[in-house]
Length: 185
Image (cartoon, rainbow, N blue to C red; front, side, top):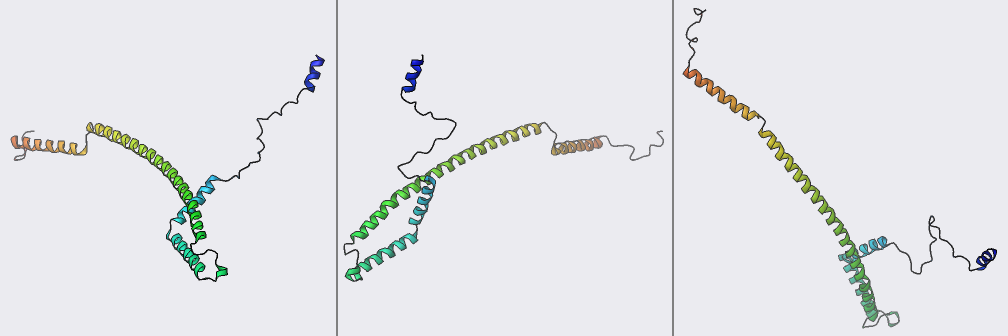
């Protein structure tokens, strides 16, 4: 037995045990870490700016200045000669970044719209359920009121009784109204 223990001690060292009750130490990452929500908000701001007249005006001013500078400036100060290849490269670069940013902003807007539609659908379901409940309550109240004497019904019954009494007086007039009833006593 002692020989077995001695062999175990000489054997390969055990792999380190991970403790499940403690958080793991962060590993170094090859890619940079970024907040997707912050990036999404930034892309929405950029897309919102790209869709304005102000962006078109500024872009037009920059292009005009670029072209005028590279045509009218002295030769040693020009940085982009006539076919304006560098300008074309800059516009292509701007377009290649603008398109994905606009698509990202649209996707985020679609997600918000989807959530809003779901909330609206749930609100409509609650409204329909409330309306159906109130309709049933009103129907039960009407059925209950059908058995209750209302003011109009009592008034019509009293008017009928008054008419009956007037007809009864017409048929059987009171004799005591013409003479005194003193002798009858």
